[in-house]
Image (cartoon, rainbow, N blue to C red; front, side, top):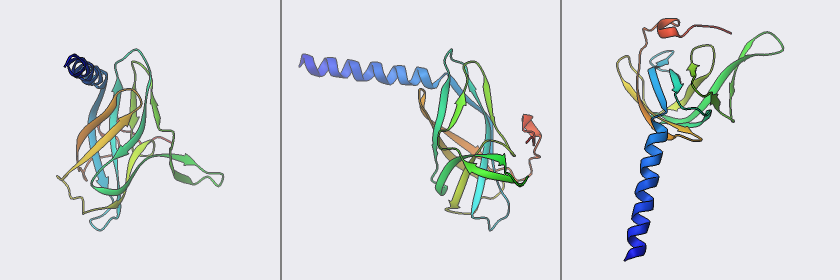
Length: 156
């Protein structure tokens, strides 16, 4: 009986510590876009703030809205043309800083959409961090937002 109580206490402490760690990461101003009503892919953008005193890393993302969801960035190729690349190692979120997922830069790529994304719809994303664990975010689809809205600038 004592073992069960100890095990339950350890499990509760772990759950509480995980929640506290997740509280160090906040997601602000998320939105998603697609290029057309018939689009097979889309992208999501947001500001990720790390208020802890240690860096964390966004290592994965999942969504029921797409068959494949990846972390991507834009990089200028040798020919001067911008390319979109999968970032397998994820994005570092430095301690006390904010990392922008924005158009023309780092972003979440939704490939093989499971349904059309219309203006006003919502997409569920689960962001997976090395330290903070999983954070689920509801992201509104905003097809009218300008690239520079909310600090999202088109920089290369």
